[in-house]
Image 1 (spheres, rainbow, N blue to C red):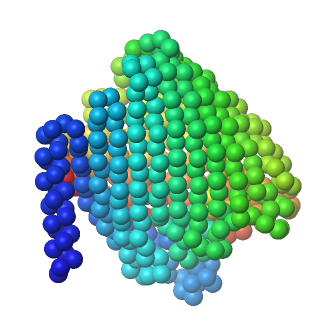
Image 2 (cartoon, rainbow, N blue to C red):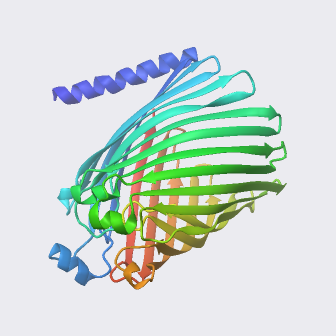
Image 3 (cartoon, rainbow, N blue to C red):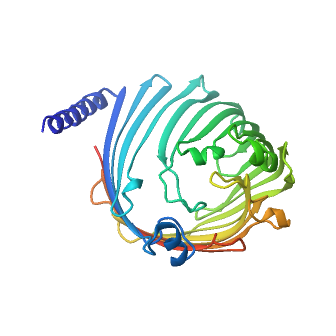
Length: 401
């Protein structure tokens, strides 16, 4: 009872301080609370009821999860400088697989700085802890993953339409589960470029990006096969064109060079690209179309990288001023570059996925939100029991004070 009273007083104090501070226009405090309940018919992404029974002792792999999330963001503006601090904590409770019950948390601090009219950038740091997913593993164990990120960036407007940019980012992933520590990763990312953007919305950009990755806990057999260091270099060209007030076409094409150090796996050289069309069909309907081929790291398998080729369509309908309906479908082909278990036959693991989503978003007031969402995926694979199918239904409610 006493703890409940303290929490009530704390939230009340935050609300009072938020209103008082906002009036001054210097400090803005924004607490929020959200809750959701979700049902998933295949939590661990098993390929069949037989696989589920072999691992769990039962073919029943569905569960209902309840989550409560509390958070607050504090914005401090001093002249042209903006400092934002945010923190949140969430509690997830599983109905059947109680061993997965967990507490997640996120903390971040960001300084959006500016010197004069033409030089600006960001200094930020963040750290979050959340349960790892099961899309790439079939282990019914709780693995809390900690992700930390530090970023420093600078932008210089040479001319009204031309901007030079540079950034340095450090990302670290740590897994609490001992058997998953081989997936721990550290990335050091450097990027610099130049961008042109005119008032009509036309964008042209050229940048160079280097990402050095290290897996500090890979040793022995794992290290000899997959290595513990890699370097990815990208030459990136980006562009956007707005031919009409209802149409926007954008693209990002990059030349990718992936070099694996101390590894028997082959390197990769190729192209990553993403093409997008955003079209406003009417005043209430719009659609996003995308086609892509990208290379990205995978955190949950021994394969360091995966090449993803696919396309997606995502329509949106604003039924009323308070109700929005979204739906989407995407198709993906995933080639795991040097994946475990099949690479010894010189054949990479290859998956095909069909993903579906549908959501209804209702905003009864300016500060509240209710969302009902469905997500589903059907994946087939040439590697043993890596294919799966799942359906997930989620109801969430959020209120921003």
